[in-house]
Amino acid sequence: MIDLYFAPTPNGQKISIMLEECGLPYQVIPVNILAGEQFTAVFKAINPNSKIPALVDHQPTDPHTTPLTIFESGAILLYLAEKTGQFLPPLADIHGRYAVMQWLMFQMSGIGPMFGQAGHFLNYAPEPIPYAIERYRREVARLYAVLNDQLAQNEYVAGNQYTIADMSIYPWVTLYKGHQQNLDDVPHVHRWYDQLKQRPALRRGYALLRDTLPRQMTPAEKETLFGIPAHGRGSTQS
Image (tube, rainbow, N blue to C red):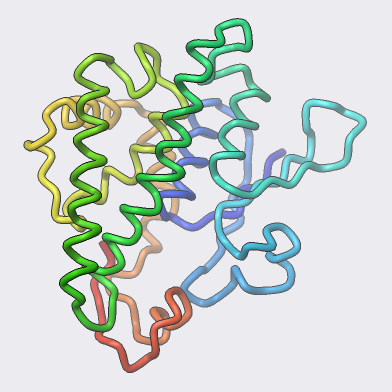
């Protein structure tokens, strides 16, 4: 059995999508990040960085090992792909394997941080900062253009097979409206996005615990999540 420490954020949804796609049995352990549960000693023993997701595999590939704990969503995706032999080309296919890995790193180093900063300054900052808003909105648009060019030549992000690279990027693209982007401007991304939405397993993984998201954060929740003083302006969840 796998324990998934989870909240319905893009980084968490990458893993719930992968677990559903792989058909692995797992149980969800919700982490209320708005209440600060990620900062408890119990959770920090699993992830010292106090971020979700985290995963504990009580039956790793080697039956003689103790339970395996992994944090960082990219590392978790790679582990699950290697554990199941799914959604990542084998070592013998070095070109295909590293195509997937480089686009996974593209998400981890570019899409995640830049989309996250855009979302923060557009929707959560206690006061509008025009320079920050414009900087991150432009960088998000640039990354969409890179992704669009890649998808103009390939059915999926890393080639012609659906992989963990697609799973890692999809949850971030769902936030395009909150980042003030229009998918009509990137038609190949739009095609890919609509195509992935038809996958039943992806839909199940993406929907996990989404009904628990608040429509609006309280000032105290914003202070817990972002370190923004409680007197900062409120914001709607994107």
